[in-house]
Every structure is written in C-alpha cells, then in structure tokens.
Length: 381
Image (cartoon, rainbow, N blue to C red; front, side):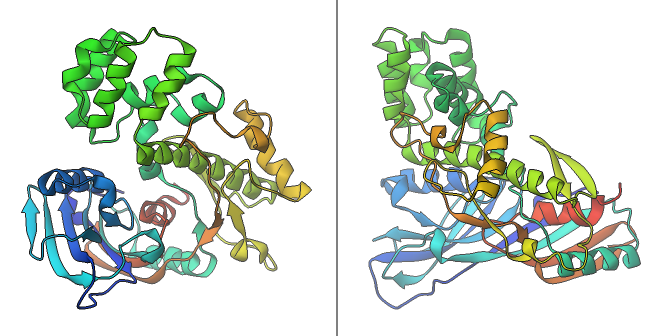
C-alpha cells in the first residue's frame, strides 16, 4: 500500500457548522492549501495582515502532505480573496463568531491508494467489517510531529522536572514550524547549546528570539530553564502537552484491548505498535459506547480504570495521575472524553486500475483517515 504519492492523492474537506450570516465582526474564508501545514499558512497570513496569529480562528490542523480545504475566520479581515505560494483564501462572507474546534463536525476524505494488493472482493469484505465493528480510535502519527525525532516528549521531561532537556527537545529536536524552514536555527542550537547567543538572528519567530535572549543573559541552571518556559508560545505548549497525552491515551486503549483479548493483529507506527481487532464477539457491546478520558491530574476514576491508567503511567516513570502535572505555566493536561472506537461513514471505493483504488469516507473530528487505511489494507499482512 502506498499513500500520499502525490498531494492530490489525499484530499480533505472540512465539514463545519459555520455559514455566512451577511454581517458580523469576522470575515469567513475557505482555505485551500497544498504542501504546507495549516500552522505555516496561518503564520504567513498573520504576517501579511500584520495581526497576531492566535486571532485567526480555525478548526483543526491539517497534514502538510495533503490537499486540504478548511474554514478560517479573521476579525475585521479583508473582504476579498487572498493567496500565496501553496495556499489560497476564498472570501465567503461575514460571521458573528469565530471558527473554532467546537464548530468542526468532521472531515470528508477522498484518498487514492496505490500499489494495492487486495482484490475488489477482499476490500469490500474489509470495508463491511470496518463499517460494522469500527476501528480503535487511536491518535495517529500526525499528532506526534513534535516527537518524530525519536528522542522523547518534552512534556514528559517537564513532568519529571528535567527542564533543560524539555527545552532542548522543543527547541532543537522539535519545531512549531515546518522542519526545513527551521533547519539552520536548530542546527545552530545543537552546536552551541546551552550558550545560544550565536543563534539569535536565526530564530524563526519572535517568541523564540525572546527566549534565546533570556537564556543568553542568564547563567544556565535548572531555575533558568524553568523560568524560560514562560516565554514559550502558549499554543505550542498546549500542542506538546496534548501530544504526550495522546500517546498515553493510545497506550491505555491498547492495554484495554489486550486485557479483553481483542488484539487480532498489530501494526507498527512512529511510537511503537498499535493493536487492532478484525471483528468483535457477540455481546461485546461495551467498546461501541466506551469513552476514555485523556489522562489528567484532575481525573477521578473508578478502581478498575484507575489501575489501568496508572499501569501505563508507571511505565513512564510517573507514580500516578496526580503527578501528571508540571510547574510550567501553560503546560497543562486538560481532559476530555474520547470515543474508544470510531465508525467511518459514507464509505465507498472505486478501482481506477488493478492496483490503484480511490476511497471516500467521512470521519468525525479528531479521528484519523490514515488509521482507516492501515486497517483496510494491512490487516493480516
């Protein structure tokens, strides 16, 4: 199976509860982007319009390796189309409140899969099973771009009080922006850390420059590195916290499936393995309605679930849920319930040639099309 061979092979249409109202403070746009992350496009728009990036409303971050259509709002934004290299804003009208995650209903995917080794009958059978039993609703690799370097989670290091390592991971090994754009900055930091003054002029954002100025003017110490976190972009801190929570949540769901005897095959991913079932035995109804909250120190769980969550945390060197916290302002672990199983809707496929198939399906917000593809094409391989 081969996906994303070309950007046009993976097309995402955002479905949201937002429509032009004829009036309102916010300009509503449909954003088209290609070969760029949502974050990079929003940053370019903010610079062009000379406004803070956090004022631009959006529903979700879309993969760089995809053609994506999504909604954004800009307070008192220009009532016209805008465009740049790899992106275009189509002005739709005015709305009275901004686009946000709560308004996002889901995404419609149109995906071309190449080098397929399934027959039409086999694929139809797998799609029927997925429609009937769903798939584990894991967070997939797109959520973990900040740890693709393989050296660990900055958020975990902060929880454990290792502030210098946490700061190094988020600045040097990770990036809020597209990796190529920040390569020279990160390489400079790698050479000079923790004496970062030579890298000041390479900082890709104002907050990173302020942070480097702070580190350059203070003696390296645990207190210095902890205080430096106050200068890290809040959105980025939340992204780092949520990436670690997402990893923990995946591990919790895996352990649950293992304990229930519902692991029929395993697939590798960036952070280890994901466990899948092909079908569910009669009477296995709990999974269909199960919602697992993301781990947080505020969680209050029954003994059954507390033991499961804490087994995963102890593997990470964290004693229990109450210790899943940091002394860093903004690096917080908020919780919300997430469905353990997701059911793709409106599934269809068409073979364009014996080894190329075009799929179409809808997923609710927060679920990953790449997991559907893994389940359909890699089961039993």
